[in-house]
Length: 158
Length: 164
Image (tube, rainbow over all chains, first blue to last red; front, side, top):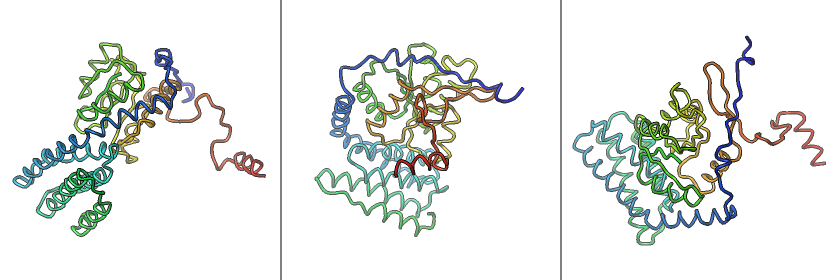
């Protein structure tokens, strides 16, 4: 039997198509509604970010005491990854970029020594500093990621 | 709507956003087993899952839904939200049978676009002995696109005559 006679193309029933109600709103009205939702979340996102940074700081402290705690490193990555995936959507793009840099760095390194911890500290400090500055209405520091990249390169792991 | 997402913040973002699009009933899971249990109970037509930060996340769920013989709904539409966008992870996600992939952070327009595509133009599934997943090709469903590839001589000649 040839391969072509063995394969099947299945078109599942358009169940969602039938269930989806025709909205009274146009696409642009729906988008406007969605953007209002995002704007409402943006107003409280600083609190969420602050809580995430606090959690990062707690793990950072534990890692200074026990650098070989693999669970701590995983949790550090998980929170940084969460910040990376959210902060950019709510006006904290530089924070998302710093978090992305931290994620990338954590994926590259296997063990945590004093050099690695210094780089991790620099990332967390930079995010915290940005949040504090933005709370005062200050502009973001777009050069931070570049400076962190230089730091990583000098440490020899980039 | 099933949301498999272990981040409480992301659930708090997705729920009101999806509500603004008109979705009404939400079921939440934080791991694949829990999600599969909810799927077995019925009443779920669509799922949004995350890239797993721990074991038993969205990719595991997609594999179970598509490949397991006891799957309650092998055709369930699955949208993967992922903070990872490297080609290797995207390949894994496609191999596990996700319908659509959306990179985080996402815009309301991007999410709406994926949902619209699933509702209006659901991808057909291909099945062979060892292969079962949604059609990976995009942009051709129901649309006559005679010359898609730029290297196609017919495309070049059509473009030339259009410019002339």
